[in-house]
Image 1 (cartoon, helix red, strand yellow):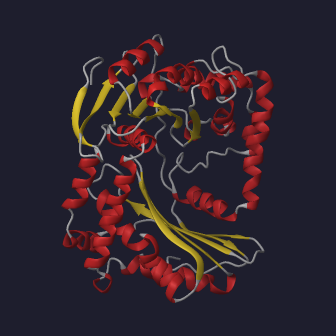
Image 2 (tube, rainbow, N blue to C red; image 1 turned 120 degrees about the vertical axis):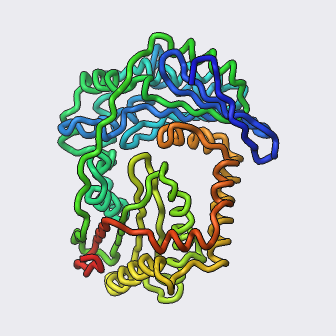
Image 3 (cartoon, rainbow, N blue to C red; image 1 turned 90 degrees about the horizontal axis):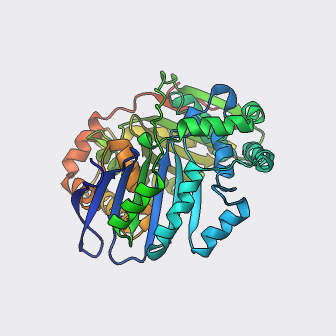
Length: 431
C-alpha cells in the first residue's frame, strides 16, 4: 500500500453495481480504506485508535473509560458545547466505543457533509482538550458505570467469565477499577493519550456516498505532522478455565460457558460461524429448541462466536431459575457436545437455514454505510486487508454440508470455562 497509489479491489454492492474498495496508506502512516456505495446517500467513518483498555497501566485501569467520555467534551478550539453544536449543525452523529485493544471513533452523516465533519473528528484524536473541569465528572460517570454492574447480573457474569477465560490483557472489562479510576490524573490522561494515539497503528474505514479522492486529500491535510507508532501489548498465558460460582441470593441464575474457537484469519472461521448458527440461529436453533422450547428450562438461551485476530471465543448463555439451573447447564453442555457426534450431525435443513442466515446478514450489512465502514476497519486490523461482501458470500457458498459435518466432528472445544451466578453452585460437566 502506498500513499496516493490506491489498490482497487472489485466489489458488488446490493444493487449489483461494481464498486471498488480503495486501500491507501496516508503520509502519516495511517491505513485508510474507502468503499463508495451507490444507492445510498449516507456516509460513515469507523476510526480505530490503538488506545484500548488492554493498554492501560495496571494501576491506572479506567483510562479508556474516561477517554470515552472526555473525547466528547471538547477538542481543538471547541468547548464541549461548541463541539456538540458543530456536529449537530452538520446533521452528523458521533460515537466513541472503548474496546480492549482499540478505541473506535464513529461518525455518520450525509455523504455531502462527511468532508466537513472530518476536521471535527480529527480534532478529537489529534487535539483533545481534556479540560480540567471535565475530569472529575468523567471520573464520576465511569465509577457509576462500574457500580451499575451490581444491578446487571447478566453483564457481571459475562465479565467474570471473560476475566477467567481470556488471556491478559484481553481479560479486561474496559470499565476499569475503582482504585485505577481514582488514581488517574489529568497528566495521565494527556500523556498516555499522546503516547498511544499514533497513526502507524490507526485504521480508518469509510463507506457510503463519498468521493475517495477528496477524502484522501482532506485526510492528508488533517493528519499532516501526526507521527509515530504505538506498540501493541503481547498476550500472556491464558487462564486454565474450569468452573467458578459467585453467590447471590436472587430468584435467577445466570450461566456462561466459554470455549476456544478459531481466530478470524484461520481457514475454519467461516465453518465455525455456520456451526454456531446451527446451535443458535434464532428460534430454530438447537439451543433454543432443546433448552427452552422442549423442556421449558430457561427464559433465555443463546450462543455467539467472537473471532479476533489472535484468538476466537464461543460464548453460550443461559438465564433460568434456581430450580432449573442444573438441568439447564446439563442440557446446554449436552447440545454443545452432541454437535460433533454422529448422532448430532448437521441436517440439510439446518445447514440451509444457517447459510441463509449468514448471507442475510451480509445483505443487511451491505445496505448500511456504518456497518460497512466498521467491517472494513475491523478486517484490516484482524486480517491485514479488507474483504468485499462478494468474497464473504463466496466463502459461505463454497462450504458443503459434508465439509461442515467433517469440521464439527474434528472440532475441539479446547479450554472450557463455566461461570455461574446465583444462590448456590452447580456441578459443571467439565469439572
